[in-house]
Length: 320
Length: 263
Image 1 (tube, rainbow over the protein chains, first blue to last red):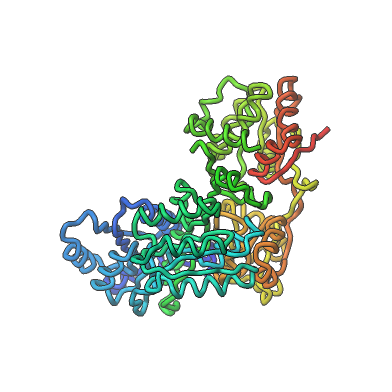
Image 2: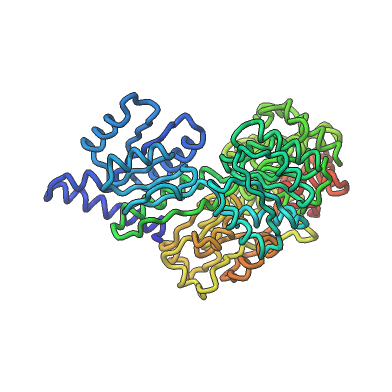
C-alpha cells in the first residue's frame, strides 16, 4: 500500500498533471479521476453518517472532492441519481448500505464501486472494479478479545438460523478451537420454540453468544426470552453490539465505525490512483469498541481479567 | 467493591456532561488528558475518580478529550490543581516554558516505564521490508509518526515517507490487524504484546519485534513548580488510591495500578 505522505506527494504531482491535461486534452477524463460520489441509503442513520463523516475527513486530507447523494432525501432517487452520474461522472462511487449499493451498481455499473455498511455483503453480486469494507468484525477479532477478558470461559453457546448464519457459525467454531473455546450451537429457524432450544443449551455453556442473525433475533419477544433464560440459568450474554448492554449483556465488542470510514477512504484512494488495483477486495473492519457491563459482571460474580480494564472503551454500571 | 462502583455509576449518571470544564471551577481538581488511554466514556471515568477523591478532601477529577482545552487550564497556572498526562506531553509543555514538574509516576505491576514496540509479520525481517506497507497503531497520527521516527532511527527515518500509518482505537486492534493481513506491522505498548500472547497465541507467534522506542514513564502527575501545601495534599489523596481495591480498580481504567512519588 502507498504511504500517506507519498499519496500527498503523488496527489500534488497528479493535480499538476491534471491541470496540464486540462489545457492539452479533453476535460472529460479529468472530470472523473479524483472525484468521488457518496451514495448514502439514509444519512440520518447514525451508522452511515459516522462512516461517511470519517470517510470525508480522510478524503479531505488527501485533497479529494466529493458529491453526496442521500437516497432518503430524493423522491425520484433513481432518476435523480442517474442524471447526476451522467452530468457529473464520478471516478468512484462509495455506497453506504445495501440499498445505495444496489441502485448505484445498476446506474453506474462501469464505474469503480466501493461499499460499506452492508449487512451480510456475501449475498451481493460483486462485479468488477468493486471493493468494500465489511460491516462486522471478524469472529477471530471478537473471540480473541473475549478470550482475553474472560480466560476461564470454555464453552460458548450460539443459536442461529441455517439460512442466515450456517457458514458464520461453522467459521466461529473453527476459529474458537485454537483458543481452547468450544462453540456449542443449536439451529433455530425463528418459528421453532426458542425456549426449548435455550433450555437445552444453557446448562451446557459458560456464556451465550448473541450473533447478528435476523432469523433468530427477529422480534423483541425472542430477544427478551434469550436474556430471561440466560438470567434464569445465571449465564452471561456476550453481544456483537452495545445496543444489548442495556438488556443485560455483560460485554459487547462492536465494530468501530470511524475506523470503517478510514478503511474505506484508504481503499478509495488506492482504487482511484491505481487502475490495476485489485478488485473484489472486502476488508474486515480492524477497529473495535468494547463495552463492559460492570453491574452484570458483579451480579454473576464472573471471573474477569482485571488487566483488561484498560482496554475497555465504555463501562456501564447498575445506575445507568 | 461492588458498592463504590454502583455509587459512582449513579453519580456519573446524574452528573451527565459533568466533564464540562466549567463544572469544577473553584474546586481543587485533578486534570487528565492522555491519548493512550482507551476509555472514552468520561462520565464513567470521572465518576470513578470523583467518588474516591470527593470523600478524601472534596477534590474533583476532570478528564479532557481535547488537548487544547487541557492545556488552556494549565496556562491559567491556577494553584491547587494537579495534572495527569503522558511524559512526552509534559516534556513538550516544559519546552514551551510551562512551569510544570513531575510529582508522581504511574506504575503497573511494579513497573513505571514502558516502551513502544514495532511488531511485524515474520516475513518482514528488517526495516527495509516496511517500504510501501501499512503500520497500524493507536493514538494520533502525529504521535505515531514521532514514535516510528524514534524506532526507525536517523538511518531509516526516510522510510516514513513510504509507510502508511493507519490509526485504530486500541493497541490490541493494531496487533490483531496484522493477523488479518490488513497491516504488515503494528506499534503497541509492551504490555499490549503481553496481552496479545494471552489473547491469541497463534497470532502472537506470527509476529516478531522489529524495533523499540526509548523507554518512557507510563503516566505522570505534574504540578506547577514549588507545589503548595494544598497541592501536596491532593497528590497524597491521589497516591493513596492504590491502597484500596476500589481505588486500584479505577486506576486500572487509565492503565496503571499505583503511583510512585518523585522526591
